[in-house]
Length: 171
Image (cartoon, rainbow, N blue to C red; front, side, top):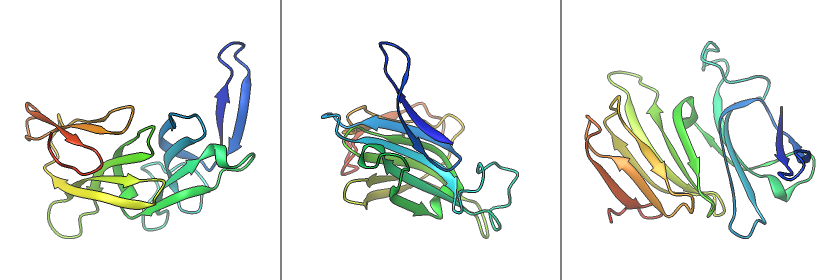
């Protein structure tokens, strides 16, 4: 697989990077254009796409974050997140390098736990994590700048709140 950027004036590929096969691709340029963040779910060994028909005990998943502009031909991860990636259904990255993940922890005994996590890709640290009820109408949206997060707060999805993405504090 390859990650590509295009020249929008002539439609030609302007840059290309080799990456492992993956899903849940999200990308954002930093405001100064010096970084291009790419976040995706991959298999730990990078051998194939992390499709649902591959048993996770034999084919563990991982979320990898790349800064594509830091390397020329082959992208190297700037952050790898194990465990949480198995059941992740949503990822978003802001231009400030904040990453929001939403998904489920694997259920061992009893119901699964759904989580929302926010990571700082540049500092390589988790800023906060929050369990929540997983409703069918759940939504989560990170602002382009990565400063605010709109999230559902009731299981019916009828109510939402805006929070500071870095702290998790309701605004």
